[in-house]
Length: 66
Image 1 (cartoon, helix red, strand yellow):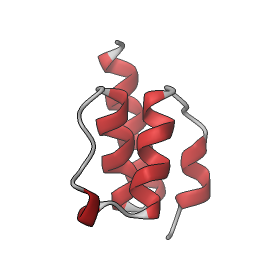
Image 2 (cartoon, rainbow, N blue to C red):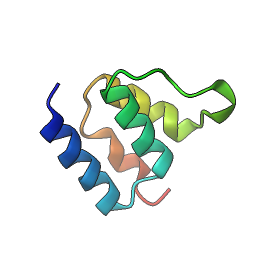
Image 3 (spheres, helix red, strand yellow):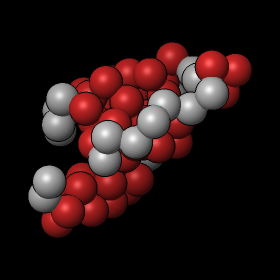
Image 4 (spheres, helix red, strand yellow):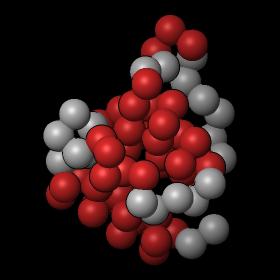
């Protein structure tokens, strides 16, 4: 796991104004952390989690400003 890439991408998403739930989901997926409880899962979180698990660094653009 590349922690520099994790950090750099997290900062990039924050600076771009990406939905906070997406960022948290992406971070948790990237780190292979367990998912949130079902009642706290949002569409943005799920998308971020899946992109993070796949180490997808491009999917965040759909969540800018949302």
